[in-house]
Image (cartoon, rainbow, N blue to C red; front, side, top):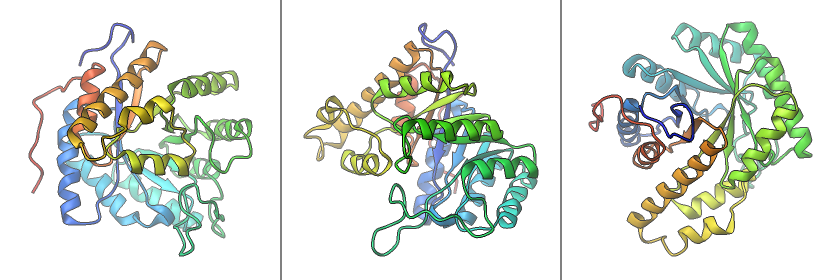
Length: 306
C-alpha cells in the first residue's frame, strides 16, 4: 500500500455493501467483495433495510464476509421495528458470531403507500419498548458487549434536524454515549465536510469523522438520493455529468476522476480515512482507491464464489 506525499500516512479505507435480494444480486455482491478484499480495508459494513426489513440477510452477509474473506465485518443495526430485548438479542447473536463492530443508527421507517416514511421522508416513531434514537441504541449496545460502535454524521445536517447546531449536539451525545467513530453521509461539496469537521472539533468531538464517498453510477438516481438526505449538488458537479446519461463508459471515467479529486482535496486538509458507499459494485471504488494511493496487497480476485 502506498500513499500520497500530501497525506503524511497511507490512506485507510472501508467499504459499505447492502444484503442481496436474489441469487444474481448475491453473485454480484461477492464479485465486488472479492475484488475489493485485496485493498485491505479497515472494515466493511453491511446495511440494514428500512424497518429492519433485511435483518436475516444482513446477518447472513456479515457472517459470511467475516468467516470467508478475513476482512473485519461490521453490521448495521437500527432502532426501528424491534423492542430493546429483540435488538439486544440481535446484538448478542452478532457477538457470538465473532462480529465486534456495529454501525448504530436510528434508522428509517419503511415507506408507506402514500410515500411517507423512508429516507428523509419523516414519519419516524420510536418503537414502543424499543430504543428511541441512536444515542439510546449506543448506550444499549455498550451494556450488551464491548462492541466497537460507529454512528452517522451529517455534514449538511440530518433532513429532520431543527438546526445544524442541534444536529451537531446529537452527534456529540452519540459520541459521549460510547461511539468510537462517525461515518458521514455522502456529500459532494467538500468544503462543507471540512467546515463540519472543524465545527465538530470545536464542539469537543474528538473521535474520527470518516467522510462517506459515493461513486456515481447513475447521476439521476444520485440526485434523487441527495435530495432525500439533504446533500447538495454543486453546479460544477452537475455539469461534469451533463449529457452522459447514455454514455456509461465516459460517465464511469468522469465519476472516478470526480471522486478521486474529492478525496485528494480531503487529503490535502489532513483527512486520511475514507468510507466508500459501493452500491455492491467494485470497479469505480477500485479505480478511486488506486488514484489516491491505496494499492492491492495481493493479485486482484475477479471470480465470484459459486
